[in-house]
Length: 320
Image (cartoon, rainbow, N blue to C red; front, side, top):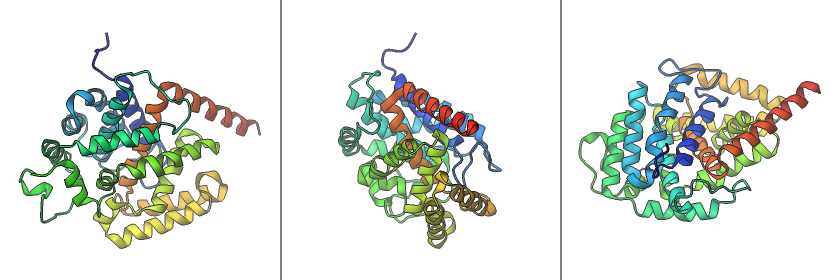
């Protein structure tokens, strides 16, 4: 029997978004065709399942507590950091969605992207209400996840052992210049909701199946914004080069053209030459957050509709 205060729609959307994003053939990332030496596609699936319980209770727990519980559950399932960025992005969106829908788990939108203005206003309220305690719990979650390439800063450093005395939003604003996820907090999730979501919608409307539309969105974001995980691990010059190469692939058509798909294969191979050093993981996190929003809007029926459309297109391709 379902719990009366558990938001199954939020839990399902978060799990589905993480699974679909991980499996999609995004360049330079773990996907259905590639693993990394320290984590596999199955690790991402197990991590996705771990998010269900924390996300479904976000309206009762608050942002910081939900992030911490999600990362704690993840680390019970897998040994490496698979989803910290996704969790940091999804939890405020989940909180805002719960407040916006007023506890109605069956409220969906028939037109893709139509909830954007309302959701952005609610996200702003969630961010402005973040507390010092939220910051402390998120710092604890980050230490537990132990992500690569964090670096060090002079004030409010994650690894200095001191508890933050500023709100989570203030902490994110301090990191916004060097981290795209922190920048999302500082800008009210502009990249996720105004750029990533519409790019994903466009890919679906152009006839791409769900996996390719997700990968196309990732490619577009990577061509438009330097991945800050790459910048922290390999340097700003490397992240700029990756962005420039992504732009050339995008201009060739990406997943929409034969030339673009050939360019994707070459680009993907180039990114993987140094293992995970050029892994555009932050861009993947933002892609997952954009997908999360659309799944919240449409629910399981949205996935069924898009899958049916993709299956129909594949049959046409086969018959043609």
